[in-house]
Every structure is written in C-alpha cells, then in structure tokens.
Length: 402
Picture 1 (cartoon, rainbow, N blue to C red):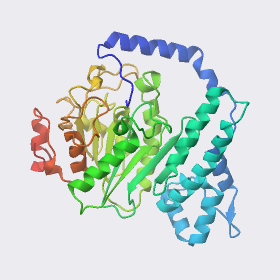
Picture 2 (picture 1 turned 90 degrees about the vertical axis):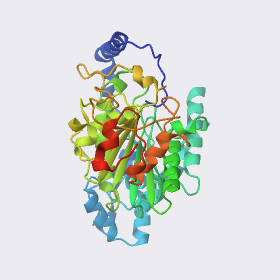
Picture 3 (picture 1 turned 60 degrees about the vertical axis):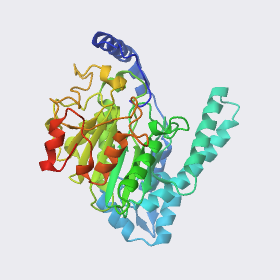
Picture 4 (picture 1 turned 45 degrees about the vertical axis):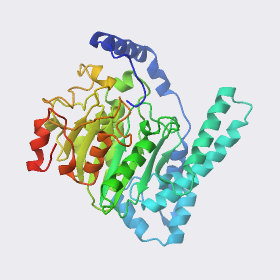
C-alpha cells in the first residue's frame, strides 16, 4: 500500500465493519457498471488489428501465442519487417511477451506519442468539463515525460488508470534481474513522483538499480519498475481482498516467463504488492531466486512454506510503518493473513533501519535499500538481519550473516 496512511488506531472491528459496508454497497449496486457496453480499448483495438494483419502475404501468429513461439517468429524477420510491425501495431507489439525487448521499447514510444497527441486534443475539447480537460493535460505531460530520451518502456496500456513498466539497465545483458512490484494507489499518473520520489515505482527501481551497481559494479543488473497491473485504489474492498492480486499475479508470471536469457530474478514486493507476490508464488518460474517483501499486510499464506515456491522469502518492516497496525487476519476472503515478519511465518527477516515509515524502504542510505541491493546481486552473506531473527542469521546453510 503505497500512499494511503490510515490511523494507527484502526481496530479489527472497525476494519471488518468498513469492509462489510463496502461489500454491501457493491453487492446492491456496484456490479451494474460491469454489465455496461464499452467500446474496444486502444490495446484491444491494436491486438485485433494484429489478428487480422499479415506480413509479406502471410498471416501473423496468434497474438496470445507462447513467448517462445512469438520469439521464434520475430527471429525470422529482418530489422525493417520488425519495425513495420511496431509502427502498424504499436500497443500490441509493445505489450507482447515474446517480442524482442528493444522492439517493445520502440513500439511503446510510438504508442506513447500517439496517446500524447490524443490527450493534447482532449485538453482543448470544449465538450469536456474543466476537470476532464485538466485530467487530459496531466496525462499528456506524463506521456511527454515517458518519451524522454533513453527511457525503456516495456509495457504500456492507457486504458482506465493505466498500466506501465519501465526497465533500468539492459535486460538482454543482465546477469541478474530485479522486479519492483508496488502496492495500492499505483497508476500511470503516479508511476513517478517529484515529491517523495522513492515512494513511486520509478524512484524505487532507479534507486535499487543504483544501489546494486554501487554494491558490485562488476555484476550486470537490470531492474524493472513493474506497474503493469490494476492496483487497488485506497483502502477498500479491492485492497482487502486478493482479487487484484490474483489478476496481477497472472500478468507478473507472464512477464517473468518471457524475460530474455536465464538470469536469476529477484522480486521486491511492497505493501499490497506483497499480496500479489504471495498469490503468484506457487506458479513462479524456477529462475525466481528471491521474493523480498517490505511493509506487507500479508501474503495470503500462514507460513512461508505455504507459498509453495523454491524462491528464498525475505521480509522487512520499519518500526514506524503503520502497516503493523493493520490486523493480520483472513476471514471469508477479507484480509491477507499472517504477518510475514513474524517468527511463525518463517521468512528471513531483514533490518530496515532508517527506512522511516511505510514508503521509505527504497530511500538511498537506508539499510533496507542496501539489503535489497545485496539480494539483487546475490551477495547473501552481506545482508543485515533483524536483531531478533536467528533463522535469518543461520539460514541458507550459513550463507547469510547479520
């Protein structure tokens, strides 16, 4: 949960009552919007065009083919043919697991520029309210920022609150890959922030990438700021259930299985992002070596072993993090279960010294960020365990110290 900060006095009964009220509201009237007819989204339209398209007289492969099948298809094309596909179907190619990552960057730049022009027109559309025009302006400026030279946009969907992912470093050459999975209130507009930059996905990933390079300049790393799922907005039904996490988990696994090479991957899951990582854990590819959670409300499991993953599970929480006051329970699908930093859960608990609250785990100079970076480069002996976590100190057959 990235930015919402409820009172630390939140009780179990108040939490359950609030969730029950939201559930009743949804059950009595909220679902009707789902049945309304909607036109195809820009991404859907691009995918449909691909499905009906052709190249050199041959039909294109199914847009939902396996990453391996799509990778083989693109390998048969020359640079000019790949570029033509990116220009014809930018959103389809830009979000296509299996397409070369450099081609996805190119396609998403084209799509971002197209959407920037759409929003620029909407800014001056008198049929929109002043609020609508202002929203269009905010989106246009966000797209302009994402189009700055050197940015590598791996996924982009402008629909609704928007989905996006950005890469720092070289995915093709990386010996180790890190993926930052953020929590609630994450969308296209707050993908990066000027104020409190390290509380947003771009700042988190950029900070982690810099820390990994500082920890070991000889190890090639890449970091993905992954906001390519529809995160819950605020404290409500979506944030209290695993619905968004389950949908996001499918998308995360699709990304991980399409990453180039076979380098180990570490996941850094913040707040509700840890719920997503928890429900996705059992299906993760074997190349995922570590799952590190920070400020977690729970991972939908009673114990780390219940995640059914071969990845090493790490957890941390700052002493000032308000998430500690959220009840660790799961009743009828509401709540996210056991506390990952509790001894009973069985994760290896890391020090989060100096992280300052719920959104400070990626701040430069903190022990939390240094620990993340050491995990990212595979330097497990260099991590600092929480004071009272003996399992962390003696874990991994003696490869962790504290």
